[in-house]
Image (cartoon, rainbow, N blue to C red; front, side, top):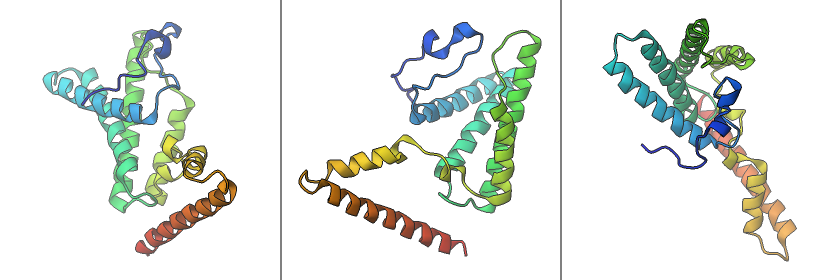
Length: 192
């Protein structure tokens, strides 16, 4: 598995001079997903080689659970999880957060600021509870770059003729929305 070459990870975009290494907003979701998958694999290999090192094993568990939760959200049912997937996704999120908190506490005691806790981590516990309780895939509520409204508008407009652009755009957009709604209705009927 190869890591994406652009944009490069540098001191400037990791903001290492501020005390905490943190990703900038220039990274695409596909880069982050690939990075998480790579990190989970590499930390697992390193943890297998260093089984007596508690910190390495907690880091491997943290990375694996994040990667598995992302995998379930990305490749699971687009609307509702099965009961098993919802339980697994929520437990992976909780395990990731607990491992991350343990690492933050461990390194904070040593005055090494490697894992910064944010309010988002508390919110993710509520997300884990909601996934388990309601079985709704969180991917329903967030937006990837390829799903953005402007991206859809552009892809439709590029295929329209200049003379009938406005009319063709609205007709094609309404057709795309109706197809999406029809597919969603069919998927909802599968769960009944």
